[in-house]
Length: 407
Image 1 (tube, rainbow, N blue to C red):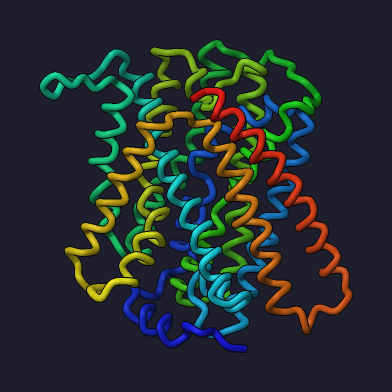
Image 2: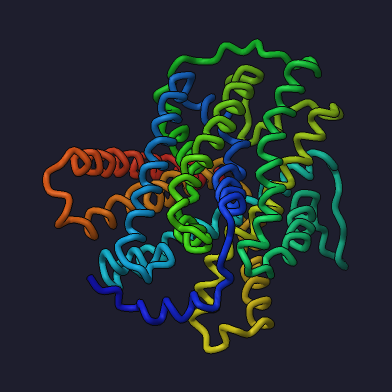
């Protein structure tokens, strides 16, 4: 079994910092899993009804399993260091190109979502803010997107995942605090938990499943995180710990939000919370921490791929320039298409389903086709491919239709 770019990949990765501990890897993976999706998981429940919780658990188990498949794919060749390497081992140069395009597009759009989130929530905290540059007037939400980008920018210059783990720890903590704040608003600040909601809403199920899948779209960075560990054999335990923790976190937030606001939920639950309440302010401030801590981890694979293609891959100044250009471009997109919920649904349906569910299964089948035979595992993987394809097509059509209608 050959990996055409093995020597190149090895030389590239010898220059990367190694030795991330089990705990630091958990922080990085939790940060990738429990990002902005936690704000929209109540909205997903309101779209599909209470029975969506069953789908939620199934998607969590499914994505955990496909994460294990990626881990096994990495074991197939000692020089596999990244998701594109897996694609190349399975399907050659075309596989590498396809995986790279989809993976980097997914990560890029997630970074855009972070900026939209920051702009929306800061605008809720400080309404009617803005400034002028000559004759150009920049409104509150747009101004906050620009301010957020300036704050995030220095964190993107860090190349070590071990160092980024300290930043990620803040994001993981924020994801735990946020459901507690929402609980406080409901129990203490007078909102209450009086909404009964619907048992099932078939019409909203495609959007609900797309949003849920988005919540577990950390597969693009899994091989990078695994490769950064001191002991790669512990990565399966990292996956289990992180998926269980994030599922409990997401589930708590979904139930709390739906009980509080029912079918009136907005794309971000923080936008429903009453203004001027202490719990609301803490929730929004906590929400703002996640993008600040997640952004650098998300764009690191994109920046590394660009840097590795240049002849100046060891240049610190070129690295800073590359990452700065990525930040600027995400700002432009965030200001142009500011539809948080619909973009998240599109990412979940088209990119997350493909990158986190379909591609791990396809790569695993191709790499281990000789060893699989006609076994139960093969039947399970084929079933996942069929269901994932249907969900992806229906969800993508629904989300694109919603984006076009609002444009």
